[in-house]
Length: 238
Image 1 (cartoon, rainbow, N blue to C red):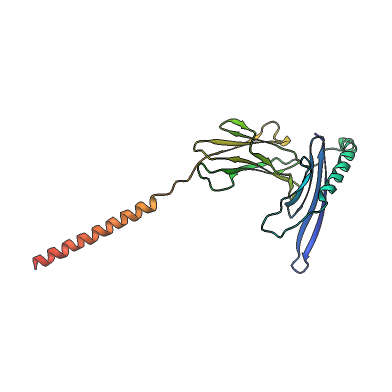
Image 2: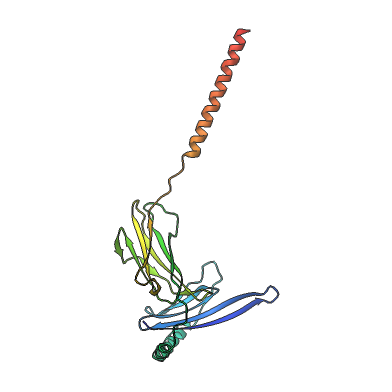
């Protein structure tokens, strides 16, 4: 798979006195099978083009001020036309250049988005980070059976060190004993995919403090009773 990536990064100094720098970026990626165009800020994606649904998708967090991206989808379409047009030229050019870029293997983790409660729908997150170059393939299983429904895949997101992040999520309803896995394949793994396993475990309320308090209360009452007994006996002796 041939890949051509154009990254336009704009560094903005928000405060010269504090010397805080922030980066806004625009990324165009295309290959014979892939098309991506998105913009972001400080390693966070703000918006991307969904070329299958022919629309822009805002991914900026809900707690921030409302931001719009007018005509960005049309700009993404134009960039993709240019990317596809230049792809054969860059493919031929890079074939004659020695491979000097370091290849970075992915690091994978799997975790639930929310606190796990049996019978309540949740989301499993497979986070793949620190890899170069894109692309990676991600697959899911439930109890050793491949899963194809309820899966979503994020855009490739760049990091400051030149590597990439990507998230795959799976909607699921926890049932005790179920086992899920996320498998990642990348060219650096040389045919030995990374697989992370997660099984449904629901934390049960701890009975330790209740037992301890109950035993303490019992001993306390026993002590009061014994004290009363000896006081009465002493008075009888007098």
